[in-house]
Length: 186
Image (tube, rainbow, N blue to C red; front, side, top):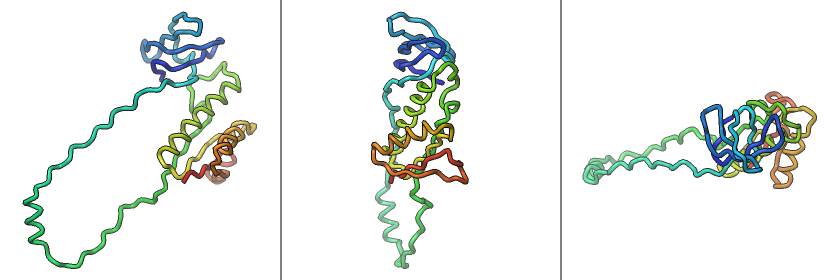
């Protein structure tokens, strides 16, 4: 898992947590613990509690091509009066869809030592971020792969959707078995 400065993290093999204040290298970060002490930790010994808010990457606008007005005028003069034919629109089914997999092994590299409650909190945070992204991106459908298990994650996901009054139904049995929920957004 990749951590950034300001991320709130928890320790996999001990109680407590802290804030990442320095990236040492790809495998080590420096964490300021809740009691103020600073220690280096391997990223494999940490899990994300809450990612820090970071400024979005700047969007670079493409250069606008300059138009030669005299060339346009000459084209207009040479234009024939043939009947215009409609061109077919580009293929666009208008169905923006997103699929997320909430299995913990897909979200964290190392989750050993985490309690079931901690695992479900990580999964629900990931779901909420994906739901917010899908709504903001005007997606039509979000497929949430939660798996079958004991049904706790499915119940929690659907409770969030009920609370926000968002329609949903069981995912395609042929594709996901009983382990998915399809969310209707648009």
